[in-house]
View (cartoon, rainbow, N blue to C red):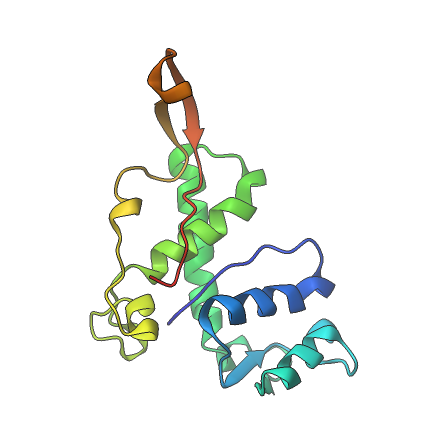
Length: 169
């Protein structure tokens, strides 16, 4: 199952996350939601974005998260995030960097779930094998040494918490 995380300030800004997803990966045919007012109310920017991109909205029944296959992926993403916090003693305040980082790692990890048969979710979406080399050097919230000013100054230590890369491949 493919997942991406886009932090937003308020629930009413969910249309911005949808807009960014469409720019990054294209518009999905169907969007399954839990029926929040921000996503289902008439006249919202989210509804306008769905109509503009011809996306069919499917709303699950109240208190039935098992109707949405993405809920399993969300649970797995939260589990990986909390394991990352525990392992590195990272402050929870960095969630807006951590969740997208761990979602990207999930995209690049081969799985047998959802019919992937050992392929990565990003590879299944794009039809190409993704490059994971940028994620091999550092883990989440690792200490790193670097030099500023073309290496002419002394080493500086800092915490590494996010690797920015441009996808698709």
